[in-house]
Length: 166
Image 1 (spheres, rainbow, N blue to C red):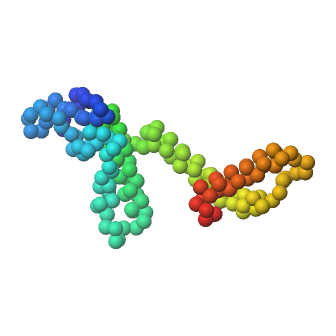
Image 2 (image 1 turned 30 degrees about the vertical axis):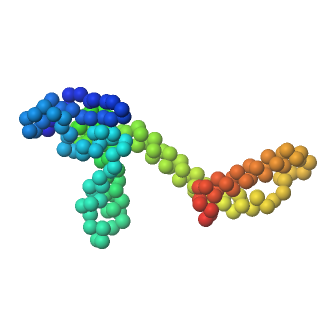
Image 3 (image 1 turned 45 degrees about the horizontal axis):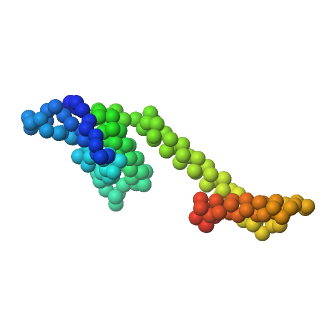
């Protein structure tokens, strides 16, 4: 395995360099755990899906497929992090529970799922309120319009989050 000595950056390209290669010349070497496509632009690199390829799609359970897909996502994230940090050992030690970007995405996904669940529960009330008049008497025209816009805004939010099939 090559020791990483520097990282060369320019024009949105990142290349992992080594002092020595396995062939003895002093050219750039990519760690075997990090495909060359990650070295040029890690954010543009396509996941390789190695874990999914090792499964038989005809006999694998949905749980096995999901587990393999998660493992491939984690491996892809580890490879990106390894290139950015110029440390190929990260591929072996990467833990998504300590990766801030992963934790932020997980939190956003949880919040989105909560919002979808809340909108699904309120779906009937949101749609019913579209046809109801003002909520109280003696409202100004501006207040009636504001209330109507808020109701239509909620209906639009329902449509966007639930795809109109709520």
